[in-house]
Length: 455
Image (cartoon, rainbow, N blue to C red):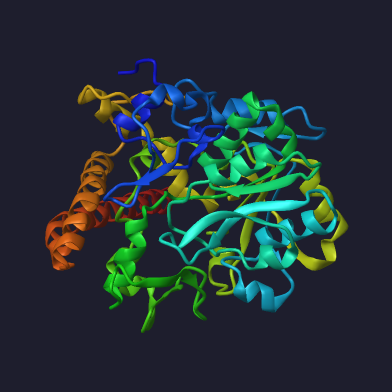
């Protein structure tokens, strides 16, 4: 079921991601609901820019934007799911001290620093830590030190409307790089389509690969599980590095009086198979590889790299700005070329969820008679595996329940309210995962037996 799909449909049906793109160029502020989600502070949806919303049917699809931006570049290669690119890589910076402080291989901040150093841009719009009610906010870095002091991975909702409105008032010749998750990068490109000033100002867009967006309440949950009071958090590091492997990181947080450091796999909230405080919009996002960004960075979740606790990036280069930096400063990096299959495997879970299974989630919305955003993939009533269908239905239910029950837990000052409500669903979901894994193992063993008989 799909109607005109303007910003009113997006907000009223729960697809708003809270980025603030629809508010840019207006005086409309931002409000936070009980679930820790940002929303435009208005009921007059006609005052908002539907064409700048990543989930509105009034906007252009991200793959079309990426094709328009990058497919005509000299030596550009095009892949259906990776998008247009000039190079695919895995690697890290060689500065071990900076790499240790980085979330992954350190290449993201290295790129931003080089963009400033070589005067490709004059400033960087990125997420930083904050001392106000939000632990993370968008701000502008004017120096390399500012870039290095930016946030690490922030599993936390942010809104860039205030910063973008500052750019609209900037009449200087300064240019900027923007850093964001795929849907935020798309929103920036959509703003540039209708605003010549922002098109000129934002010269480079840097995409950060994203599993899904979390609300502000997720940070509270992780801290609460760790023994801190959820409303007293002053600092959060979701991914402090451990010395075992790239995925065994530590959740580190402080309150006004205490500090905690706990391996994320010791916390219920650290299990990313469970969609704690996940945005609905993320279940309807096809943007696996940030198709609209000049360069895309993420974690190299490949067997070859995951055992390195210092972290390794995957990198997709789409524009010459970044490719020239890699060539000029190659002595500062360790880079290996990846093929397309390796790049897809590096983000296998995201690819499966966003490409192979989104059609079934669209079908569920259609079954309910709900509005949903148009996608290149269309609703499909079946997945190849019935267990995967059960997993999808249950993950949707869990996603919806987590917001409501955590708000109740906060209201009653009792985290057990949340755990009691979620425990039966999580146990059931884990049984589906185990069953699915056993079936896969069984198929592999059967295939091996056939091969052995033939040989």
